[in-house]
Length: 278
Ligand code: HPA
Image: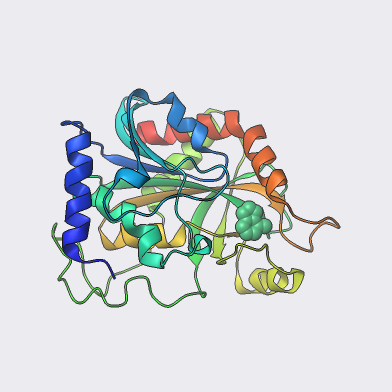
């Protein structure tokens, strides 16, 4: 388990590298979506491997780099690639950068991820606004973060409300932006699975019964850590494939990355609009 001093050391290093630049929004860019970080103005790049105590990114399509700079007039810190449980990392390791970002003053999180479509009304290429998530897979990320001993900013509490994992105002804003730029935006519940294998058709049927619309291998620990730190979160999934058993074809990593590329212009327009209004 990380010690408070380790978060502080990482935050101090990142703050120094940013030379006075103060990001307010963290962007976590999932599989094949890291291209958005290339559109940041006056970028300062910091590789994850240089941040004390932070783990490296090993997944395909995840560059493993923080990019800080101006995006749509806002000071952002983008994560070009994230950390996953299936890379062998503990939940707290995957969520580590979120608390570090919080310690350097970030108060908002926008995350994106590639997902399988569980809801039969979805189709490949759909952008989905996350309205909530379900995580039945793992012992608590926050177990052991006793009381308020990690609370440096006055936000962190052991028992806290998760009624709005994904912020209500950000959800309204996202609907407005999607309508303005005329792109269809679906809504749904993200169901977390640890991976790295894709699910079985029986798992997907069970997820559908349990209320999942999307399935993916990230997002929840980041969201949970952000909420613990009092950050407001917006989450977007891209349906890169229909989930196992929906179509009569095997799932593959290539399909996920190809669809992410195809959706790039729409995804970029949506994220830009939402970041501007957050
Ligand atoms: N399942 C889990 N994670 C995913 C999928 C999927 O079908 N597609 C992209 N990420």
